[in-house]
Image 1 (tube, rainbow, N blue to C red):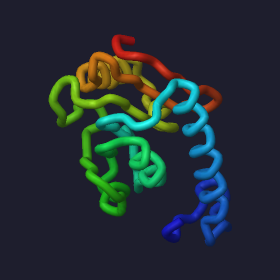
Image 2: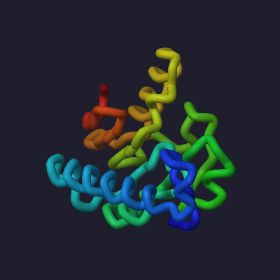
Image 3: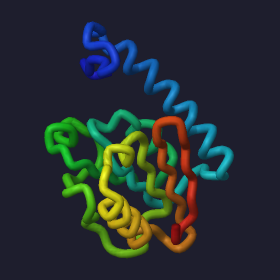
Image 4: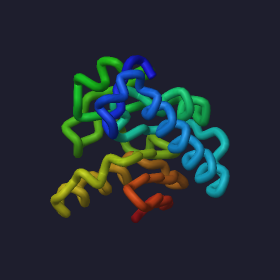
Length: 147
């Protein structure tokens, strides 16, 4: 995938392991979307989008895709509409997103008060009938607004 080496195996210079991991992630995401009844949402936020590994898949599930990440080095290579953020504050108005998606990102937040601030921002930016899907190691969490 665009020359990305596997983080699981630095000797994998071809990135084939990344592609297999991406396939598994997309299968899990697709199954979750089907289970929750998500087919095509108006506006989707990919929180922690990185280089946009899930852009093609996620953008096919929405009318407007927006990605955010703290790393400029990552988002400079990302596809779609992306913004660099400080990790907490989202540069969007209230009630904008139908779906906020974050996969293997929030487990890196180690301070409860920061996690609370991030979740408050999710709530602020999420439409009243919006959904948050967060993938965490060993868990997939789906929650409607006001969590």
